[in-house]
Length: 237
Image (cartoon, rainbow, N blue to C red):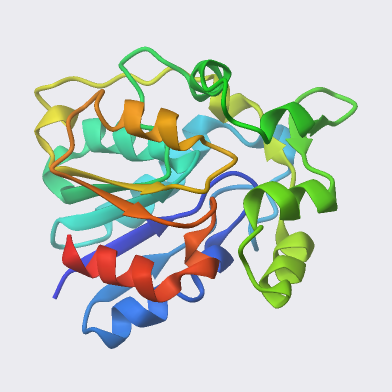
């Protein structure tokens, strides 16, 4: 039996894994999901959401496990995977980046997103009056994040998505080959993604060479549009 810890991306919450966690459990594994601060059921004000708080919450979940885990991160959570792996390399069996930011040492998510000139979503982000958080209009959320998902899933996502704090995206990653670099990595690229372009996903998966690179013919949200295919890939790692 393996233990999977599934970490959601920007604006979403543990709810995005509602089709994946049960499939992993049905296959005989443990699947742990949780809300990062300010997401899902966690009511931390968005102005107080920081990368350090993300790390603290993830550390609590990770260090509570007795055996090394398979750590899965979607999108923005890629930097969280890398940083937590640097801090606790012996607690992690494998890292799985699901169309996620696999960054170079010293790089921020915002810097990476600006380099991804083929991405379509970020120019449509709407910033709040304080300039500390952003969100997307409902129609753009559908067009960019969930174009191949069912209407039921789209409507649920529209209701549950929250504004995303900018602060975590501006924190540079600090990793080393001796700690983070020694953990096996898997990248799952999504070939119809408009949020992180497929070309940029492929570029990132070569920054820190991955043990395997898998492809899904989906948008940015395969946990909704292709849960069977995504679950099979996760079970294969």
